[in-house]
Amino acid sequence: MSAPQPSLPPFLRGLSARLLVLTVIFVMVSEVLIFVPSVARFRSNYLHEKVADGQLAILALEATPDNMVSDALARELLGHVGAYGIVLHKPNATLMLDAGGAPRIDATFDLGDAGVFRLIADAMAALAQRDNHILRVLDISPRDPHTVVEVILDDDPMRKAMWDYGSRIFELSIVISLITAALLYLALQWLLVSPLRRLTAGMVAFRADPEDQSRDVAPSGRADEIGLAQRELAMMQETVRQALRHNARLAALGTAVTKINHDLRNILSTARLISDGLADSEAPEVKRVTPRLLAAIDRAVALCTRTLSFTREGAPPLRRSRFAFSGLVEEIAEVVEPKTEDGARLRNNVAPTLMVEADRDQLFRVVLNVARNAIEAGARHVVVSTQSDIEALVIEIADDGPGLPPKARDNLFRPFAGSARPGGTGLGLAIAREIMRAHGGDITLCDSTAAGTAFCLRLPDTAQCVPAANRAPSGADRATSTAGS
Figure 1 (cartoon, rainbow, N blue to C red):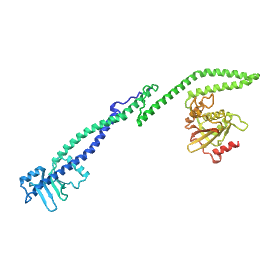
Figure 2: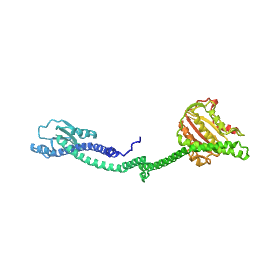
Figure 3: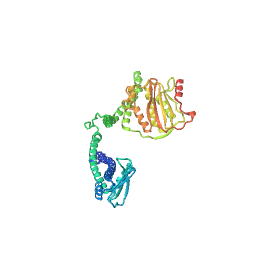
Figure 4: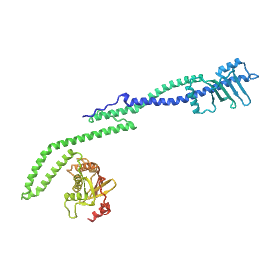
């Protein structure tokens, strides 16, 4: 069953709509933070103006000989100020202007001692009230710092003026919020959302048809993160496309080899039977040629088998068991090459008590492959040793060959590309890495110089504790042993 084809979300569920809503909300929150102090400042200015008007009104008392005016004039002066009474406290005198019958005072506010937070709290409390209250407001005179002016007035006109001012601020805030949100939305849409949607559409189209290059996202010249993402996506698409083509060629190769393998093996089997008959011939020329002919046929069969196995098997199934690794190395030493004049071609420096838990046949295949590659490349001796750490067992396979050429190092574990000898397929190390990774480990090239090459095989948590007397030789021990040999 095929996976559903993904598509870009609609506008209301996409990033654009969420960005627009969040932009409006954040701008409105900013406007609220501006609105509250603005209303508090309006109330403070309103009361300061009333105090200043009250001082101007009470100056009429100083113009009279007895510091008194008629009731009609007093009511007219108080009406202009909008107050019930005005009191002027001087250092040497107190002047009062009222129309008689002062009302009961509900609250007193001293503007000289009010801080910012107090002004904001008083303003919000005034807006929340519904009934009229009589306020007693005190402040220092703006003309004489030694004079205190006291005004008694209603707060209902002040509250209405605050609501009118707040409404204008709110309407202006809405307009500013919409304009700011629209500009910010368009900027983010241009800088971020639209490029992201193009990137997403490119990924969706690439998933639907990786071979179609016409719908790839063309990288822009931007130097920011979006431009980097566009360039990396283009490079990733090309890399994946090349990998798909390479895998398709490998799949075609596997299919072709599978189809011809049966017939080819039959042909080679017939040739082997005939060659076995030639081996019994007494003719000197036939006896000389037959071993090379048999070896060529065996190599052809092995090549066909390895190629077919690599293209068909995938990750090998593991049958884990616990066994002595030293015994496995001894078996490999008998298979690799017979002893030469200066000793065995493969030297076993593994402690006899070292136990590993792995698939014995698969590990045999890996070590044999690496050792045989070294000997075929010209090494005279191959040394197998181990080193244990907390997390893994490290198996080192070192030789004294000529080292790997640069081309082989660059393509070391790539099938059909990493062979260091003419006629090689490069499958051996590719299969070895596949086996080691199936065990949870890996195989790496530790060193390769003109003095020799060393591969390291890692097996996680497989080494049994080895007594100090029986531990695997260190690098210095191996060097001494090799030199003594």
